[in-house]
Image 1 (cartoon, rainbow, N blue to C red):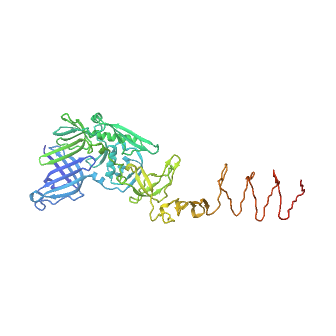
Image 2: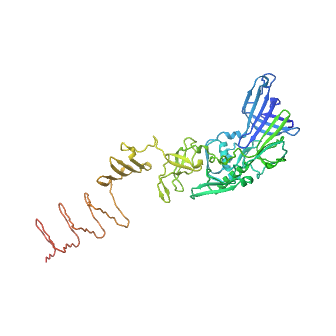
Image 3: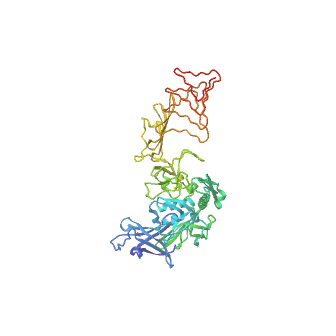
Length: 568
């Protein structure tokens, strides 16, 4: 290595103790904050030392150069920790700092985003940094939720679409992109001082197919993409079913991303290249020597600048990501919502006016911010067929249990409602509530009770306030249909009504009226009409006729009267 020069700025000003440093390192890797450390040996406060020790939270910047070259900015961040250890002349002080990516490790408050792309949400989470995102994140989403930290959301999105994220050295731009040979970035030709390279295609698929379910179209949504080079030649096709996708376009993006990561996992190398100060993650490099193993052109996935007395150098990491197995590349992550993968969640119905009339609801969650509301959630039911099934839409403010399809917060499903002390069930009328089933609509407009108490099977339909109460009761003697209040009307628009029994049929009431617009016929073996106080047969014309013997008699006076009476 060549001798290096450096400067350490604290709060924008040169640090007085910087000249006592005997080791400075700056480490950068994909999907993590950059870390810088300044080590000072022989640390002994008060013995010829300036006690200007940086405070946690102070801005820290590092510049390093090789030989007489102009110093390059290699780190901009803030002090996050101080460490002292050892004793006597071997006591050491370590100042540790992290770059602006650290801001992504905190907050924000839980939030939902409607009609916004992944790229748009990431821009909002970037803590004021500019953003550069891959095109696969540009599609507008109906609903996206952020329930964890910004870093968790971005990590999951990257994992899902086969991307990586990093912050540039200046701390001004957040990149969310693919790191592969075909990308565009700054290019460096470098001399190899030492190299450890490897190729391993044993666990890499040749083609990745992503399968999901399109709820609107009621059919699978699939697409695929192929890996490159050795992976394509040596691997076998693989089908992913654990990564939720909404449509074929998203399936293609996920398949392409996983295939890209799988291809990149085949080759990896650790290379000592001397010192290269103007280096960024994602830059492409061309190695002057690879010894016939790895490709000469690679993308930088990590590096470390290291400066010690008389030496300065850079070690770069190329190729494969931290995951190598396909299961790791796929994982079981959702879409940036680790909270949604932890199991069922208690919610409260906030909207049941589904514009598409599919019985869906929106739900808010008490454990999250009061404004956090799901998209339209489908409701689990006993059956859901074409214009058939059971529909019971939860009412506003009902407590419900919610899960998310494959951990995707864009796809909530309401499993059902939960009774509580505020919203209690109707009290059971018997000692054994298990023999009663009660269905009550909102505000008790209609109640349907089915019970089997004391050997009496009963179904009762009741409207609000008991205005209408119809019971169907079955016992050993038969079935009784009883109306508690009001009239009972049997009506048919154009057909007929038939009452039929193998036994007797009895019509009984205070008054019984049989009325027809046409004829009324009574037909039987014998027809008896009897009145306890009187009987009247009346009409414009009345005819009494017998095909056999006929008899008119009276125990009292018999009177036959008319304007003209003819007998015989």
